[in-house]
Length: 454
Image (cartoon, rainbow, N blue to C red; front, side):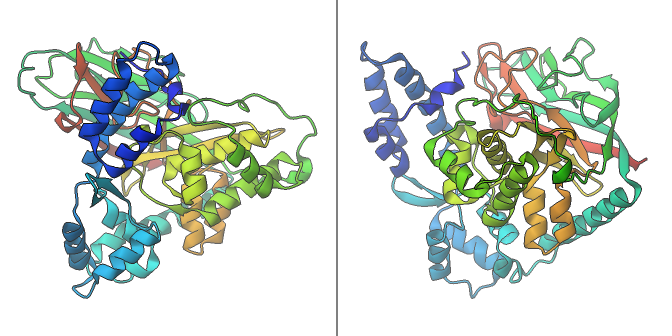
């Protein structure tokens, strides 16, 4: 059964919170089960506690490293002179992601790569230059693409993609059918000329062209990988909107709340007022919000979003977050300020990499929907690339596969159980007829077979 995610906005009882943040998940589950036996428990709290059990089942697996293992990795990457006192200082600064598991400090699986990515003083100490090559090559590539797009006024790209999900055999599940969902580009906004080229299983169900979280759905015994091959194009026009040309009448669509994450909490309302001030022009409002996120918060890899009851407040209080966290904060603050904003996400598909990525759109008449990528903009700002920073307010590069136009939307063929990512779809989902496939048993491969600038 798929839970109603809106109940994540219900606060947890204090005793449950204490156990959660100490990392005593065995006792936490026991305490929750006792509470669920109470016939007078309010329905909303009951639903919230049931979801908390699932959250706490996923939480520990993201924090595998002890203090000593973290130190070993840091010394291997940065030099034998790295001191334990430095690690303690990084914890004090909230620069490394950690959690208590049974009262012991444990570090997130990607804490080291995140530190190198976000802290220049540690990037400069990296011994293996291969760790840094991608960042530099990617910046040079994007700077070139942006210069060309500004010069020509538009830029398009054609992609030939192949996505594959392999499902490993699970003991006791041999011969059982699996339902697998793989993402597809939505034929809207910048996407044109989508062509489905091949399917591993011809009876797969392909969602309609404009479905908000578009997928191809397979149902078969996984004796071979599920795969889809397709081509599509993205067509981007360079936008340089002028605040002086903004119309006095603006639409009100996409300005509503959407629980549990896009909520107008007292703190977020106060933050919006602090950022926007007395500004009335919606384009300038959006730019002020973009500037706050790109200059006052720092990029940071995140744990699974399902473990975070309210994503925009997380980044608004910690001042750190990854691409999706930054995009959600932008959307929420824009909506509070009366500027329509919505989700767009899927993959970054470039000659250097294919990876999950999230960004957003906002609407200002007469320009219509404009793109915004706070995480790419923030990276440019930190590197001192002002042109690229300005570009990602209003624009995107063409190296994208938008597979999600709405946050927290059901699939065309709905899942029976809680998804691994209940908000977005970039790496596929799989389940048996009577329960989810363990995440450790699914392996996603995303390939750009050919990319051509048009």
